Length: 123
Image (cartoon, rainbow, N blue to C red):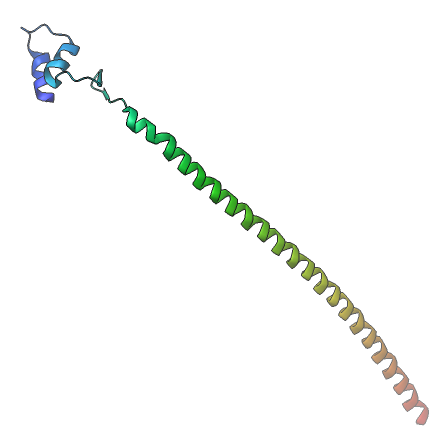
């Protein structure tokens, strides 16, 4: 097809426009728009009627995915809130345990000091 077109373009005896050459090489057919080596095939009305259905189906799928993602986000936020509350409770327990440990160490040091004084008095 391209060779035939090139032959017609190179033929000096034939004075045809590119459009006429295209029509000779490709023939004429309704529904086609011809231009500089490019062909545009318009969509048929039946295929155009499928586009809204496809788009609506895709839109509905996206909406469902968005809804599921939002629900997952809500659940994740709730889990994070619960984990944060649990961490705060654990932190309070650690602080209390550290305070108890310091008090126990203070009492132990006081007891050791008293024992040392008593031992010194006996001698």
